[in-house]
Amino acid sequence: MDFKKIAREVLEIEANELLRSANNLNDEIEKAVKLILNIKGKLIVTGVGKSGLIGAKLAATYASTGTSSFFIHPTEAMHGDLGMIDKDDGVLAISYSGESEELIKLLPHIKRFNIPLIAMARDKKTTLGKYADVFISINITKEACPLNIAPTSSTTLTLALGDALGVCLMRAKNFQKEDFASFHPGGSLGKQLFIKVKDIMKNDNLPICTEDTLIKDAIVIMSEGKLGNVFIVDKENKLKSILSDGDVRRALLDEDFSINKKAIDYASKNPKTLDDKNILASVALKLIEENKIQILAITDKTGKIEGALHIHHLIEAGIK
Image (tube, rainbow, N blue to C red; front, side):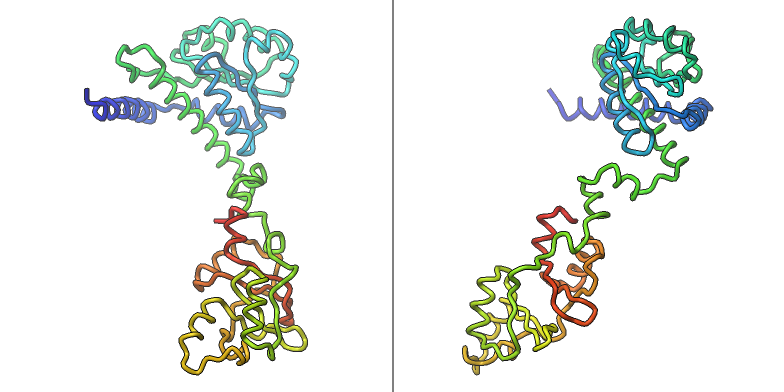
């Protein structure tokens, strides 16, 4: 059996259904967007079975992209959770058949409070479609299932149209990546936009030595500092140069090398520094990558050493 061929056919069937829907879009999407933008409360998403699973995902997407939203199961709504729906809210109800019993029982109670209803179903003539203020068609010509029974193309289309609605809302609200990060402070984007250099830099027990320090002593300081580098400062604690483990290895190849020479003789002059610990760590990472270095010395505006930011600190913090 050619499973690769079967998988390709499934993708093609579902892709064709998405394309067909894209070509048949009408004004209902725009009406749905305007309805949601005009509600003063939350967008409540509801559905049963596969539609319910998709609804839960969509509610999470809307909530994380600037539209206050949560999912309610119709059965739970009929047993007390209906009180979670306020008169200022709106409802997005999903049912491919448009006749899901648990969902249909909920509709009269929604309309009794004059709560606006957006429906997603295969046909506007279904019970769900008749109750709807705005109707979004999720009708398909063929499920990807070989029996044309299991929800496949229909669930894919429902999810895609729900996502399309979410993106329209984002555009309407001019929702930016900074806004997204506010809802995902622990995510990779949140880290890029909120974590600053001062939050992750090393500022205690720094491997520091003076201009007079011998390289044999600097190597000991480097080993104890566990940064693979030593910061060489003057009497005012201002950074003069950085001695790296690479500098030491290259020094060992020098015919005139002596462990009794000064570390500064083998150190890298004009090291890359950063004099603003309040900038984003992601910006510092770009500086490290552009200069092909592993460590940044963090100084104040006068050049006095305040900390160190190693590329490993950035990796551990999840900065990319």
